[in-house]
Length: 138
Image (cartoon, rainbow, N blue to C red):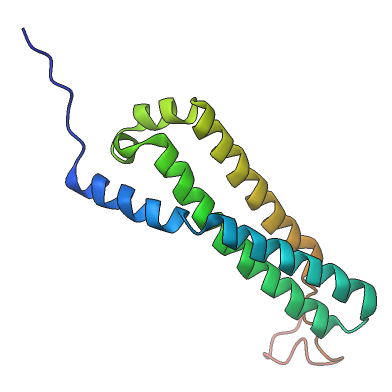
């Protein structure tokens, strides 16, 4: 009696190879995010203008988002091509040292991005009297 391991679908293989290509740029994207964070800290120290702080925080947000996408691609690659189709293989891939490392990195980048969105990006302040111009009153 022969046991055959189910093959990975063609779509999963294509997505796996695409994620490998995206994941190759992770170190460079992470360096860009670190540089954007340093620039934001410099702007926060030297400037009181909320427009400049907002622009620097948005640059950091874009850099963190790009680095996060590459880290997520590396995470899926670490899980293996079978994980694209099978949740059990995905869970087993997460339990490997490489999978756990990328899962931790993805969670760290998500936390940094959310903290940046909540704390560093100043909201646009409307001039006095323009908040209710839509015709509704409280």
